[in-house]
Length: 256
Image (cartoon, rainbow, N blue to C red; front, side, top):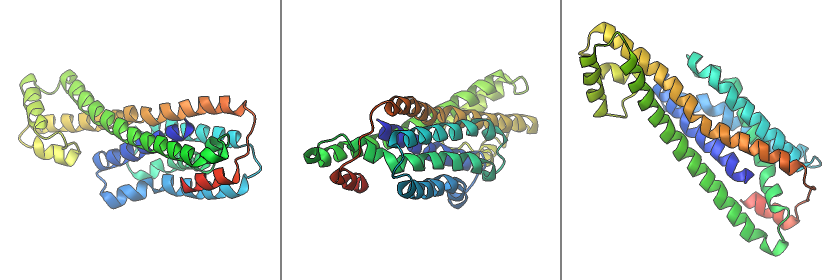
C-alpha cells in the first residue's frame, strides 16, 4: 500500500542519513538533528498546507506528485553524498523529499479509507496503521542493516585491492577492525590503526571515506525503490474513479 511505501521511505531515510552524518562528517546528535531537520520541517509544513488548500483536488493526483517529488529528492542525494563536506549540501534534496512526504501524509489515509464501508472504517484504520508501522520498522531495519553491511564489504574490498598497503598489514588492519565493528568514523579508525605507517594510515582513512559514501548510496536504494514503487502504483491509482471519504473515514484517518 501507499502508506507502507511512504513509511519505508521515511524509516529508511531517518536511519541511513543520521548514521552517515555521524560516521562521515562526525556530527554529534545536535548537528545530526539540525542537518535532517529540513526533511521533517518541510514534511510537516507541506502536510498542513496541502491538507487545507488541496481539498478540491483529485487525491490520487496529489499522491502521485508526492511520490514523484520524494523519488526525485532521494535520487538527487546520490550524487551529492560523495561531495558533502557539511550537512548544508543535503538541504535542497531533503526539502524536496520532505515536501513529497508532506503531500503523501496529507492524502494517503483519506484515500485508503475512502472506499471502506462506514461500519468497518475503524477496523480498516487499524489495519492501515499497522501497515504503516510495519513499513517504518522495515525501512529502519533494512536501510540500517544494508548500510552497515555495504560499509563492511566496500571497506574490505577496497583494502584488498589497494596496492599501497602491504598484504601483511591488510590482514592486521582487518583483524583489529573485526574486534570493534562499530568504530567506523575516521577519527575512531585512526586511533585503531595508529601503529601503522603514516602512508598506510592515509590510505585506510581514504578507503573508509569512500566506503562510507558508497554504503549510504546503497542504503538509500531502500527508500528509493519504495518511492519508485509508490510512484508506479500512484499512476495506476489515478486511473481509478475518485471516491470521496465519508465523515467517519476522515475522522479515522485523522486519528491514525
